[in-house]
Image (cartoon, rainbow over the protein chains, first blue to last red):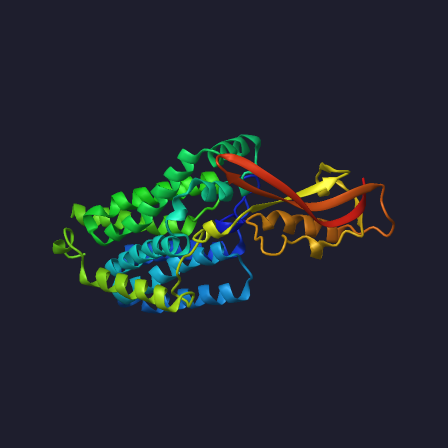
Amino acid sequence: MLVVVDSADDAVATVGPGAWSGVALALASIVAWCWHPARRWSLLGFVLPVAAWSWTERVLVESGVHHGKILPAAVALALSLSGVEAACGVVAATYVLAGVAKLTGAGVDFLHPDYLGTLLLERSFHQPEWLSTFRLAVAQSPLACSTMATFTLLAELGALLFLLPRYRLRVCLVLVAMHAGIYLTMGYIYVSWVAVLLGLATHLGSEVKR
Amino acid sequence: MPPGYRGSVSRPALLAFVVYLLGGLVLGEVFPFSRFSMYADIARRDYGAVPVFLVGGDQGDPSRLSGFHHLDPDQFHSPPGLGSAMDYVVDDWAAIVRARPAAEPGPLAVEVAYDLVRVRDGGIQRQRVVVARGTAWP
């Protein structure tokens, strides 16, 4: 198994089986829009989300794994219905929704270092020694925890800028950095999300150069 | 992407953004929508729950034991009201224990417990809760 999202473990890289479908969807999406991002892929955009939904329903997975498939599936759907621009709109909405959920779920308490510290603390054990040491140090640092929480919230809400083509690459890099930080501190790998971000950013680069 | 889109928001992007944002907010977890509420409720969690496998009171590895007696894997789940992001560790232990049943009590006392941990004012607070007990053979 490959570890993606909530079933991630840095010591033993295991990914829930459902995560593979997210990766497959992301790759399929990239291939689709690189070839021809038009309605030719309507059928694929229909089949892929249904397949992801079916897989989600059949396999008991953690919520993180579930979310790992939602973004690429929704992007594939938007891509097939309306092309790359619509896919970018879905990506922007996804991250803004995640930011809004934090504000409505925890409010300004999300920025309090004790809460993120506790979350990191829980993920600090059953890891290689260097990683446990690192995570324990971060979890007990109010400055590090508050900084990471603030960065995460700003990055997610700032993903609104993904709507603007000129900012997409920069937003993509910020979000990839955020995912890298989440992996390092908590072990959650959103491979399919990163694949979608990079795919869209790469696509944008080729368009702008023309 | 038409050239004119580069400096402004395209209509398809804006439409998809609005539809997906409203769909997620209103419908919640209805495919393909979601509220993406990962970690959003962290302020409601008082503790993190870290599973520990104890052999004779010390941390041990169940994979190094040959048989288990009266250690019920169904009791391994985290204490009520305390979800754990480390469930996959416990799942591995449960699989090992199920695969190696022992008919007779073993010489080693084994326990599965959770360390309830939290950070308060930059320091770690810890409290141990045992959820299952049994014996094992080395």
